[in-house]
Image (cartoon, rainbow, N blue to C red):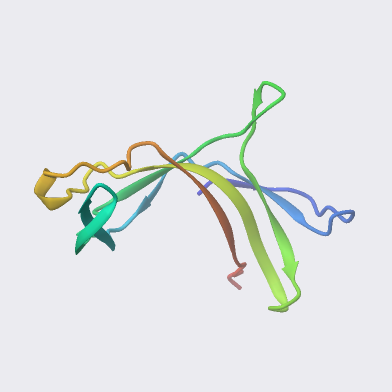
Length: 124
């Protein structure tokens, strides 16, 4: 994924990282669903998601589109560097079929805010 790593910000003790993502692709997982009527669940079943596509929403600040920015921070609990970003995305699932297509789903440009944090691994 294309990124821009900025200079260390001593005032906030972090390094900014701009993320230039167009889309993120994930593999299929099974999700639990409940078939029901009038908000009453009756039949539990699993639905394979198939390939999912996540598209980042680029924030608009003062009328200008900005690249999403995360930060490399020091995680005191883990004693190591972490990358942290809050990312607004659209989730699309063009290939998911619920009950053979009899039931529709709402994973078309579904807005999600992801709060992500993970250890930074540096290859030596």
